[in-house]
Length: 401
Image (cartoon, rainbow, N blue to C red; front, side, top):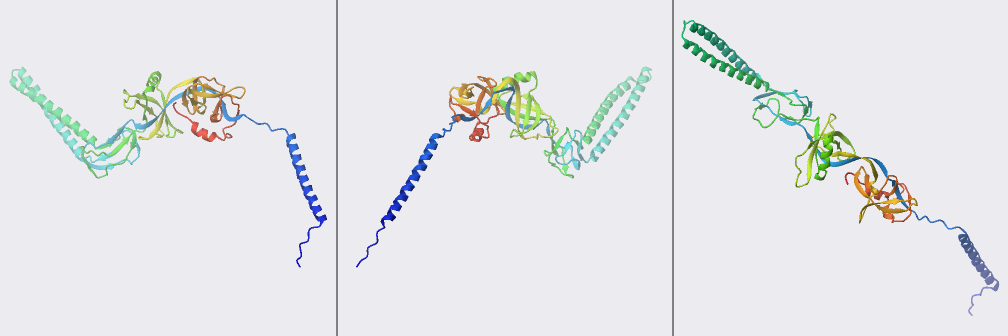
């Protein structure tokens, strides 16, 4: 005989049904309260203004620079060579030393040249004595001939001998001067103030005046020049402004962050390089601190003129369109409108606006890609603009436009 499962009792099923109904009712009540509360709460205002970085156009005296890459060149550099033969007895400088004009650099054995000068001096003295004797003889013969006591032929002979001896003495004196110069050349002096380079000869070396190898290279350090090239398109205004006064030139580090020296333009080449359309210029600088080194590459900044009361905006504000340069101007309602402008030179990140914008007008500096004409904008700082780092990298400018 099989036993079937016992069915739940009627009271138990009733209790389960009531519990389910109660739970459903509570859920519906809570949902209804949330809906009523949401409908009763006021809607949060939606801010439709687009955040951008904006700035008012400024006005200032704007220096107009032409930037170029320059090469530092000494005014004088020379390979100091010996001029007489002999043994190099002394070297009186160290490599890389600053020496003054006239300072002795080296000494060649002078004894041979001292002897030659003494010999030349003795020959001069000998021939001068003979010359004096001939003058006495000529005087005596002249007196005898005048008194009819001697032949006039002796007078003519002594005169001829005297003239020849005078020429001999002059030749002796020239030889003596040459010997004196040869002796002086045994002392090697610095022709100008400068810095010595690597020493090329050692003490004890036998040197000759015809040797191609010198003793040392001497380079003038102060003053010094910087050669650089600019476009032929700038030549006319450079000539015009330089005719009034020499134009200022700054020598800068290659990254443009440090000024090394300030000088003035002192050379404009006579011809434009046809292949490149460039013309070479030179500026001269005081270099007492030796910030400029021969052969060094530097930045050269030529100040052409200063634009008085120029309207300027950050270079990032100027955009390129189909009709040319334009800026987004923010009106009193904080809405933007594009405006065509005539942009000129960029100087240290500041764009000179020649026409189309007045000082004090507010323009969008960062965030132009997020706006369109007529949209409302709100100002934010550069740090709080999420697109600012990218814009700052792509929109920075400097130098000549």
